[in-house]
Image (cartoon, rainbow, N blue to C red; front, side):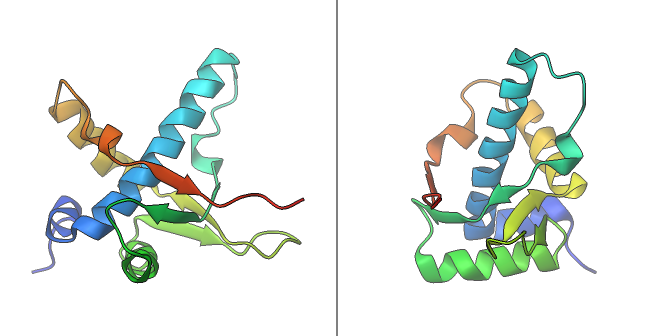
Length: 123
């Protein structure tokens, strides 16, 4: 029997750390949208540049985690426009698992323990 989505993340801390880093970006964008009083729900269309580092995950594990998260349906990817950079998006399955766990654990958020290292944007 294949493990449940939350079990996969429990069994693979690096995957979880990468997914939670994207979750932080997703929540930050959601909060910005609320402040801007955006009438349009763009939650299904939010794409982010590839995270280049997560404090608890080494660079080799980071690449593997991205691949596994895509393979297991937690991340979607797009090859991008003219710049050729890949973009990533939390899938509804990922948002559901992460949102459900966050709601089940009141108090200090475990999502705050990961510092996202974003790649610089070259213009």
